[in-house]
Length: 84
Image (cartoon, rainbow, N blue to C red; front, top):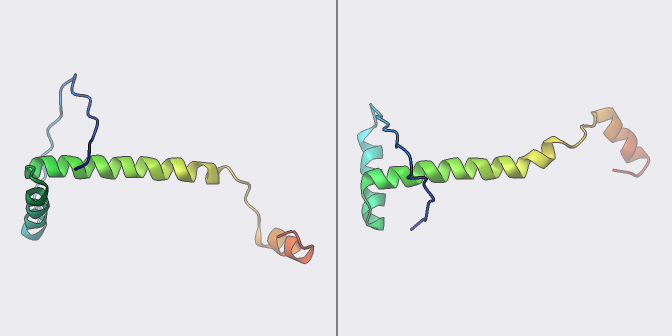
């Protein structure tokens, strides 16, 4: 089971999600049962995991965003000079 740090000192928001397909609800219920948690807890875990994963991907990609961009002709020139 995933351990997720929540800041429980303040108020917690409530989210209502409508028009969720029955198949999706059944799948989430099944995952929750396998872990021995409520469906509500399973959804909280999924949301937290998704957000943390996105933040991790952002941290990984950020250094790449700062690299200089070379045009195709610059790359071809480098290849011709043996620098690529």
